[in-house]
Amino acid sequence: MGFVTKMITLAKLLVCVCVYVPSSSSPLQFKAELRRRWCRNSLSLSVTSTRAQKMVTGGFVQMLRKRKELIPLIGFMAFAATGATSACIYFLFTKTDVILNKTANPEPWERLDPSKPQKLITIKQQWKPVEELEIVKKLTK
Image 1 (cartoon, rainbow, N blue to C red):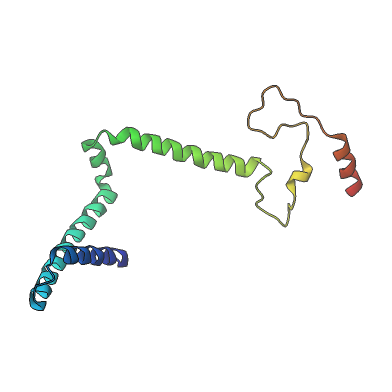
Image 2: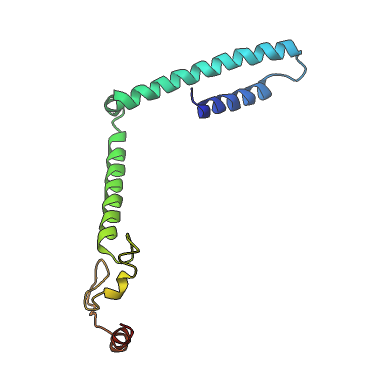
């Protein structure tokens, strides 16, 4: 068992012992009850971890066959994950807000074309360069 699993088992055991073992019992009874509950909890956790391992290795399709109500949920989650990943990749390579290489390209927003819209969707908007800004850019270069 891993460290986290052992810690969870120990926490469950402490909760079980503190709740169910009366404080008036003798130390020997307490020790016996502690051993009995420890064995029972560690056994149930090993069964659970084996079941989880089987589900990861090949029981995923079998689980979907048994529980058909999970198919749309998994489909929507896969669609959302794919959409989020593709949006991140799109914005990473097309937008100037994200800088991958600061040394070779320190300020990419300085080289923007003012006539090209920077939004994802623009409706009835005209993009024109600001004359004062263009003059300042020419003077600083």
